[in-house]
Length: 171
Image 1 (cartoon, rainbow, N blue to C red):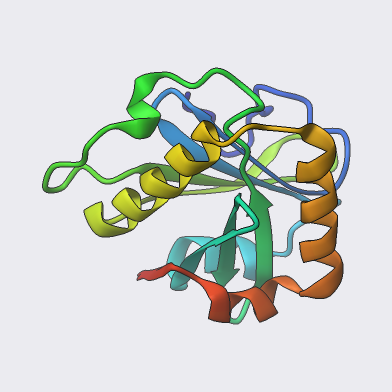
Image 2 (cartoon, one colour; image 1 turned 180 degrees about the vertical axis):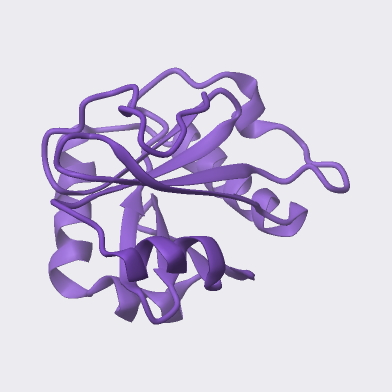
């Protein structure tokens, strides 16, 4: 999937906030807000991005921070939401860690900013191991939602950074 800046995003996101998915062999991180400032849009292209990966109560959480521009935001992933192809669980070879695309959408679902990053093999392996654990555990939606509510009501996203199993910065 390749949606460019100033194009309509391929799915209508109704509410402001964050959402993520795995689609066409990459993780998609979407942040929707009413509008984005020029500072935030330039920062997305030029400032370092920190990505932290937390796995708590069998819930994978990605924390994304755009240095000096966008506060730490949390993106929750659930392998039980969709049927993902086996590329999600592949073994990584040198130089082939997960691709990720970050999209900033405005209130009309128009892409205002976009940036691609590629995770290291090491971080990708860590994520895959946790996703396999989540996939292999018996799943109860009520338990998942209860655990997620507990996490999000206890810790702000920036407070979860100290719990990260893996962190990387992208310049």
